[in-house]
Length: 174
Image (cartoon, rainbow, N blue to C red; front, side, top):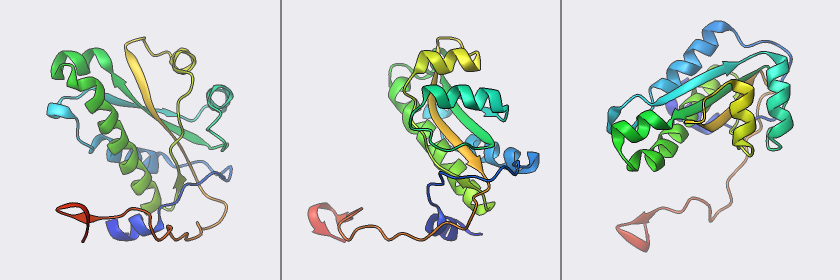
């Protein structure tokens, strides 16, 4: 599947079968996350692949936006100590952008592999740090549930006024 087909087919998936995600596919997803940029090209972003049902259940209990019961979670997190020391104060905000880019790469790769995925928000940072054994200086940025969807995703058209594109200045359409 090429990039534009993956972009067209990518949908938020909130239901998954119990079928496990293969190690080969997990490696491809983590590879995709690692291909996203980081500020000043400094390595401060990391991933944790969670496939232990007990750990997934614990994370679901403290993350109300995680509605799905996936076989795998990919957690994208930033080592803030490294980000701040290598990039400076801009590292705090740039790392959030970089984590989003990594997450989008994972979502596109999942689509290309025939898997379902979505972003989930982090609402209890201390709780998720404790569950994952992360030190305080590591910030969880993105939780991505991944699995096999029970049926192919349905195509949904964006509203007519969504994602407007302007040319050179606001109000001048491309």
